[in-house]
Image (cartoon, rainbow, N blue to C red; front, side, top):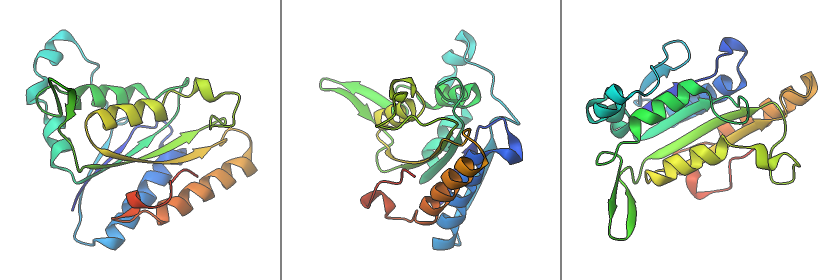
Length: 196
């Protein structure tokens, strides 16, 4: 199994999403000790934002081939100003490439990353779930599910939310998400939802 592990939080060692994404990768490696892991820290080594020049060369972008070569993509994503870090958006702009990861036909869009598993570790300071009055402010999980679903991938999300509501709330959210990460296995996409 080939695993592509991406982190995008700017918080370094204090990042909840980094802790969760690391736990997911650890669990996958326990199930397959021979798994090859490629790690990219998008905050430490950010990609430039998309320009006309880089957009014209996207078919040759190494990020596309790296994404397509992976069986499982694990993404640690913070939640900044109601969406994903700009560093992660810059990476997504390089892998969503017509003719490489999706195409259009007479019936609409065809995702070319079918069978690929994308597991997202998302940390949110407030609570934005289904019962929250802030649900309409949530544009990270919805964006990531939309993008990778559009590309044809199977998307799973582990969420630690409310981590900005004090030390006890942070620890409870992180504990729940780490527990969900320990349940991630090769067939976890068939089971219960991974939201914590």
